[in-house]
Amino acid sequence: MEADKKELFTSIKTIRKSDRAYQQLVAIINNCQIMPGEKLPSERELALKLGISRQSTREAIYRAQSMGLIEVRPGEGSFVVSSARETLKDPMKALLEEEAGKIFDFLEIRRVIEGWCAARAAIMATEADLEKIRTALEQMQQMALTDTRWDKEDTDFHMFIAAASKNVLATHIMQTLKESFEEYFRLRRTTIREDKTKKGIYLQQHIDIYEAISRKDSDLSQMKVLEHLETIEEVIIDDLRKQRQD
Image (cartoon, rainbow, N blue to C red; front, top):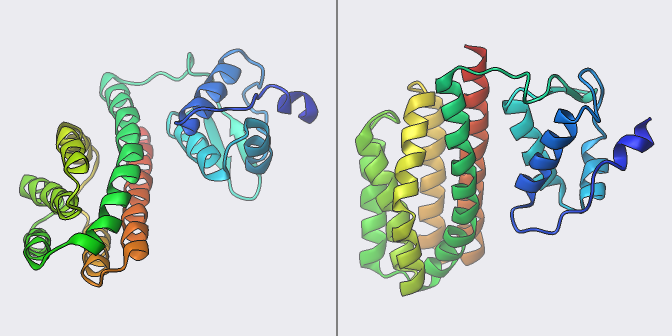
């Protein structure tokens, strides 16, 4: 039976591989090829069959879990709970999950653009650039996560880093993403409650990014941006899971 399940998955060769993996999971569950109560192949087996990384596979599993399609049991594996057709959501939860899908795409683009911008800024940033980044950071320290002013300073922080890269195209790309920043903050305000722990984590990550750039460490600057964006994605998934339980 386990061998038959593995053959249901085909290799993925696309840019957004976690999305394709998620779509395959949904289709297979909806078509009752893996029934509620049955166990999915392991994360390692899925990654091999899909031809993608374990990280992309993990993202697809997390997304299916947040949608209520599967249950992840520590030490046991992932089990199908219900099909998407059977998973009924109220309009607000459905809207949040739809918006979250867009936000995950937004974060994927940010990883590529902002990771590069931070690495480049570590080389190219002037004292004036560093002052702008630091000022936005200092403003954020005075605000709550639920304060709309945080949204502006957070956006400015990342925009100033892009500008510090001295790459006009990268700066323009970041400008076009500003609308998506607003969508992200709107979703975040809808799902989260004020949480000083989260604020502390976000602030420290922004501080780490700034310090890496100011020390002119390209590799570390890029790594700190990627760590920050990974945390954001994990928080969104967790917040949506809590929304489902409310």
